[in-house]
Length: 313
Image 1: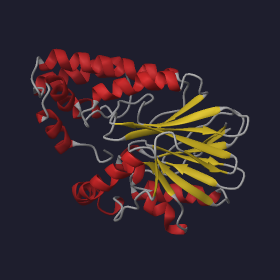
Image 2: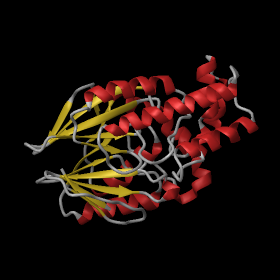
Image 3: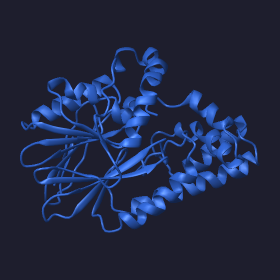
Image 4: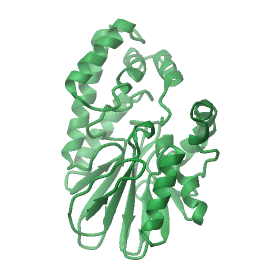
């Protein structure tokens, strides 16, 4: 599990975390292990309590995250979910077992979770067995774009972006006293891992990154859903990756809505050369047909990608 004093700390649980010293409230990172897609959950420790941002995918990681919250010896004040993928919302039900708290999400994110949660359980429950949570606790505090919620010294402002990496994305800006701002960016920018692209909104995602580059230019630190915290330059890195990914798919698809097996292999080699040694390389091919379909102006590839979608999506 890592911690950062905005100060930060990390300390291993079922997964891994890291941290670096800055000044302000403490941001602890719980990182799931590989079966849980290395997803980050953030425990923001203020003077009188803890706010959790995103909540992990699988039962073992969720239980480890719950133990980390209890170990801080401060009450859980709230949970915030950045977007509608199960690796970010599956753990809410486990965390509220020790007492119900407000669960915040942008309104579009909450609606999408309600739409997909049972279908995801039907799809992945038989695969993961007891590791897949048996229930979903839905957001009960819906936020409009630019709404702010405050917990004593911690103030979170939500930005609702619509489709980007997922069907409904948002990010949060945290301000605390005189310590400046940091942002929790969900999966809008992956750091050091191959990203998920199978929801088929690559054009919207690139447009959202352009917006974020302006809005977050002065934010000191970004806390992504996957990978280590970084500066705002992370957004440009993600944009470069997606542009190259789209360029390679456009060439290989040649106007078709799906890639051949040979083209998929070539894409995989190209992107692994672009980001050598990065984890989650299986996601390269997973989203290829969705992007090809988007480029071709059809939904055939998106439907094919959805049938293969990762458990966290």
